[in-house]
Image (cartoon, rainbow over all chains, first blue to last red; front, side, top):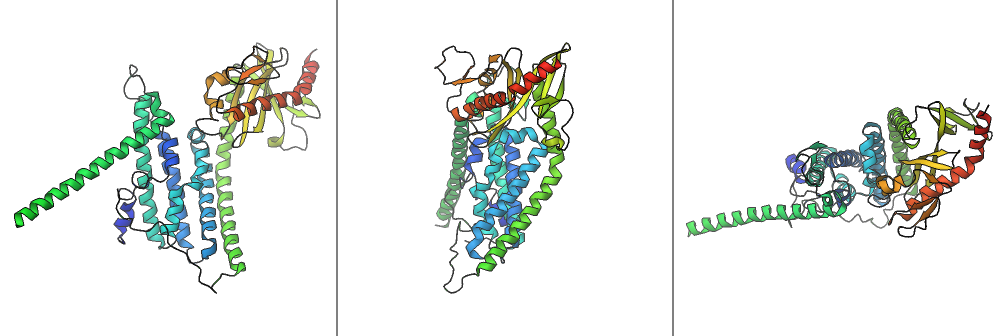
Length: 215
Length: 225
């Protein structure tokens, strides 16, 4: 099923094909750096910058790049934008850059970005590639921020560093540790699966009622 | 969750027989994009370096104060020709000159803050440590830059027990595994799961002190009336 409207290009990555919550891509940064909202947001924005820049450039040069060197070209382009993002983060938010550590450089090997270049940007005009990249960026950032919000709230009792539950709250330290990442993602996937199932059940019920009435 | 993707993840990029791209074009494509990538990186480097350098200077000043135990002030000294001098050595760019920092409290020197760097598990670990030549003891240690494995190697600056182990300890340092302490002078308990990163810090300090100790003692002698 090919979807061609600009709205479909933009919204596809946000919900229906959300890279984290549906396709389970880019789990390395999703599990590793979402121990706070600030880190999640910074990683989301850095990845968005790289995805958007790479998609625009790959789409622009798609007719000039021979098939034999396309993957090398994508990696070169992605690595360039990652280097730029790394420097910008270091200059603007040095403390968050230090917190993210090696994961900024590891955006180069984020399968979400390479997949969008190979599957979409390399075959579509710049406009569609841009919309697709924006949609996927929003979807990725939203997923990371949801994870970061849950983990920081429960694991630290704060939101963006501000105390939410007060001094009497005993933080669930496990939530900001690596197991907390798996736990949060697992529960989030169960919750989203349940919502989807409910939606499907409701549609089935409506169809059954319609069929009965027609009979 | 099992909806079909609107775009396939990958489509075959088959090269038809006889339609091979010429090597010249392949080189030109990669070369051209490489040049563009280089230009983009250089522009970003030029735009971000002033802010990065300013931040590094602030972090260094804070680290010097921390590893010297809050001195009243500190002087920057330059290592040149086997001794310490107060003015930058001629002919050496200021950013390339090797420096140590001498802290003072109540007018008396408290020790030197010395930078060191060594290849760790992922990348070079850069750190600073305080050293008192009068007692041959470390005053403290702080990691300045590290890209060690998150959750494991990054404990070299997140594990306060490990960091605290470098305070008031005799040199040379001796790395021991957790539970293997023998009460020897200079023992540092390494982090389980981050042995290479822990050992790198210990080696970096020992190597740097071995190299600089004659220079530091010379300055000490010269500074005496």
